Image 1 (cartoon, rainbow, N blue to C red):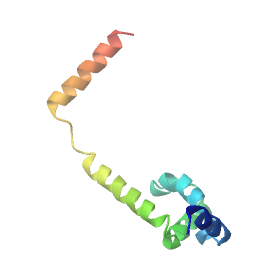
Image 2 (tube, rainbow, N blue to C red):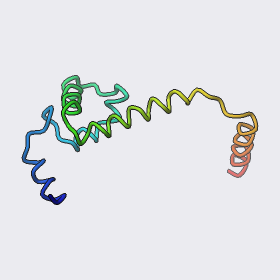
Image 3 (cartoon, rainbow, N blue to C red):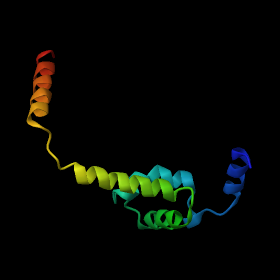
Length: 96
């Protein structure tokens, strides 16, 4: 089946959670970060992700990636790198 036909068929089928894949992907980071203020939208996205074979892998990857970054984000940079960054900032500030 061509991608075009598959896309048409997917659009004709009811979307899990009452929201389409584009809507879920547009709100994915806000959903993952817990920044959505609308509980109904949160529930729609959650329901969609539970059923959608197309969106769930992306959600699962992004969730794992954010966890990975968070776990490693608390490591401080080596002193030499911090000095280089600080020196570069001072030099750029002097050129303004």
